[in-house]
Image (cartoon, rainbow, N blue to C red):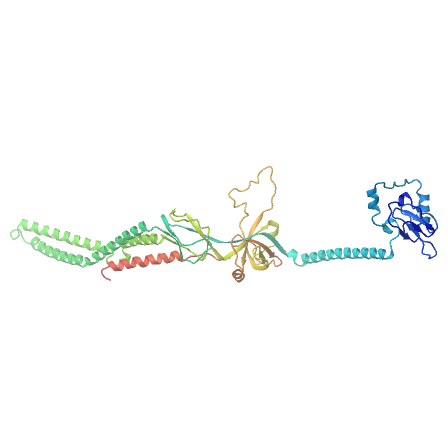
Length: 488
């Protein structure tokens, strides 16, 4: 096809030397118009004439003439002379619509469909965006403006510090971190040699005091009999003195009267001494119960202290909880107040949410709160209530409070910790740990409650472990008293 056309063979030209194919372009819709043969190099050939090159962008001879007339001042592009460039240019035929000719009807329809699809997508996107903005605005108007949210919230709880009450050496460590313990369970044991010796000494002193009181009680009757005997002697001495004092000098010699008077004085002194002994015995409390005797009470107090010190060699947990921060080791010398570990009550935890000053304006005690934890994610929602607000900001309670009376002062929005209680059932189903991050949302629509100026009614702490030790010490002292009291 490259060397022939309708009027005969086409002489080869330099431009057609490297041309391997030609294609036909119809320049009119009429079937009588002869087709124009165009080579890939841009030369055209009519049905009855030699092939001539057409200007770039021309679709037929008429179009080419028009282009030549209107673009006489436009320099013609130089044809590439590089064989590699010619090979690349003639490797594939260039479509008609890329050379400036109108695209086929199918291509135009496809392009129009694409543009319509693109317009629909843009309309859908901006429509959804407007709908989302409308929904967000409606939510804020209905509920969003009646809530305050913060993610500066953390789980708080009672962290009970375990410390020794006496001096001693650690001999046993009975628990480890993360272990669950009960109130009264043994945690650490100290060497009890010194405490045992002190307890034995206090026991002996208490027994001695009780026996002294018992001996005094037994001698009470003897003192009473002595008083009676001295009273009788005094009576006889008084009678003898009166008899001699009323007689005449001829009957009673002066020496006898003096002896009678001396006997009377001795009898009076003996009676006074016996009465003093009786009163002393009564002053010792021999007539009262042994437990009320002052000497016994003092000895019993020393005994109870020694007993409790002996019991304190075994350090027990005051509450139920989980062991944490265990630092005690075997052989360590500990003293009163030295922290050994912590026991955390995970069943009694709450949330401290740090809200900005402006967010607390409409908060009231009792308002409902929704909380989410990073531990469980959004799938678990906790419900609580506002219990109160802290007495001051964190900067007010810090060891180094900020100095605002400076020339370069910059206002910083402060935050106040708001105490939020949790539902026990939800907390039991999904336990939390102290220090975990929370996201708190307070519903402030109901604003008729009490202002955040009252005490938070959180449950208080109380342990009965030490009360039990005091009761045991009292029972041990009573046992020692019973053993040494002669009347029991």
